Image (cartoon, rainbow, N blue to C red; front, top):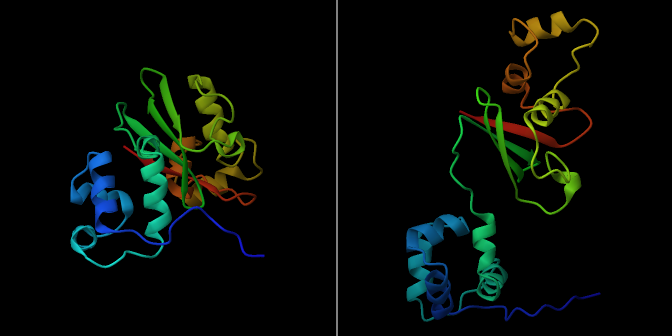
Length: 181
């Protein structure tokens, strides 16, 4: 069965200009946001032809709800360590950490609590963070753990060091971690 949507199926250069103005972006910034080249945005804004393709529903959604851009904006890291909790290629949660001060700040980029690093908990404690890290590693009690640590080139059990080597990947799921210092 064919589904119908409210999208027109095409855009005009005025629509792109309106979106850029609404989002208060330069051509370069809009290009980065839409994952296209600046040249593509320039062409869209100067063409007399209609614009078609996958860009149409995205632009129309943003024209209807420009606040979506802000909810997707990645804030700057204010702490020492940033961990991105990923599901396949989708960023679910950003975890900013200062381990010396034992401070954790998170931002969820997905509504489903089952896909968030800390589930429904939006203000995890440092202990919650430590527990989360260990959940993305093999257990401390693993049989022949020293052999596995040696294989990874790690001198002792440290979740961050293990995650740096394994990306926190587990056999039973598609979640993984990106560490940024």
